[in-house]
Amino acid sequence: MPTPTDGLPQHLVPGRRLVPYLWGLTLLFLLRVLGQVLVACCQVPFLPSMPHWYSGLLPYPLLLPSQLLILALQVKINRDLAQGRGWFQRPRPRLGRGLQYFSYGYALVMVVRYGLTMALYPERRWLGEGTIPIVFHWVLAAYLWLWGQGHRTGGKA
Image (cartoon, rainbow, N blue to C red):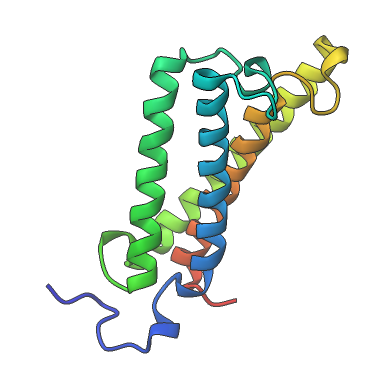
């Protein structure tokens, strides 16, 4: 089935310019997931202990599959954008605005969460227990913002 971008030069395909940044954010999230798996399964000494990686809001047997699902979705989005075809590369300005507004709220909630964590547990400042999940929620918020930007602008700067 033809898409609205068939026949366009690859540099004009929506979101194409953002692909390296989206892959970079996906890689960061993958490293976070792998780090937590190594700590949970192997207690590797060169990484922070499990309390640093895990807030406990979602049981780890549910958290890991949800993280893998997020990674699979990011890979699919990135591939669609890189190849200039597929459902995720079609320009949808309204979806882009929604993704960006959601990313603002998501990041703001994590700012509040970080502030409350630091206020309630001063011994955790700055990068103590439970801050790794907060930082990587910002990574996910940045991913959503960039993907939304691709939909809104067609990946143009």
